[in-house]
Length: 466
Image (cartoon, rainbow, N blue to C red; front, side, top):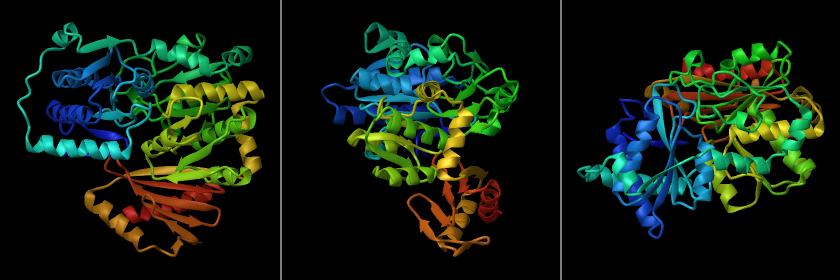
């Protein structure tokens, strides 16, 4: 069964994510495009560094070309933000990225990008799923030509996704300040699509895990969280670098490590960039955050009189808001955020450069910037635990949450939100329990004013999974 989750369709290669299933999804995409974009049926297609990603992308291109869709196919692996940029810049109908983002190496996936340069909206995904149901009921005989034939016929056009994207980035970031700061930078693309990008902008950057390795080596899954950045953290502790940055498998999410080897999560990065855009660059607009992002955002927006939107998990909800109105910054807990000075898309590389611009302009270390947050908002600590569950376990956990307990351990529940999963508010903290939209997991998120309290809240939540 093909199901589109919070960030597209993902599945285990050869079990769910197969060429046969891909044919059906690509055909449904073609039908959607011809129905909604009859005057310019066209796509941009990119792919990451995973096993068979290139082959899956080429086969997708062939299906679409067979259906008389003009295809712009990246001539090598490309990041998700590169595809989103070209989807908007080339004024095509949709963008497609073959990627499973931060999932383990046995997965691959299919992301859709809207023509405004961000994730496809929930409404677009719903329409595509309707087309997919029709294709399921009436599967055709797939009789498409070879890739070479479609290239010769100019129905598939190969292009360089990286070069013009990097030229665009150069206009958006203050590289004069970065050059003056002379930061010693360590970058980990995590064997993903961020390979061979940042050195074109900052040639002296030291890179690790920058070779082709679809198994992701010892990392396991390319998600830029503390437990996956142990090598970077140890290297940062040597004192040789001022900042460490890491991007996930398709380079749309960011993690950072300060000069002393402390992991800096997406909550702090979001707040640092929000304050810089609002206070230093004097940008204005509303703020959008998913329900799993830090309460510091709520406190800051309330203090500054900034309108705040809170959405379910999934950047597609943020991107929809960014496409409809003036959003200063929008983001989620998992490391992805978009800003008013860029396309309405997560972009790990762009946000890393913007974070370094903040350091350079304010002449502060990343540690200093994080300390300022504690001073202004009080201590906020956060952890997330992911637990593999069966469908029955998932139902049992959600049923327990649905009983709406009045206490989480020793803490009184002040309020409950069911916007996405179950978010239990306690004094100076909260616990969120929700099923993953892309994997057989229940995710447990907690934020509080001490790490011990965070662990207590998580422990109480995890009891439900046993």
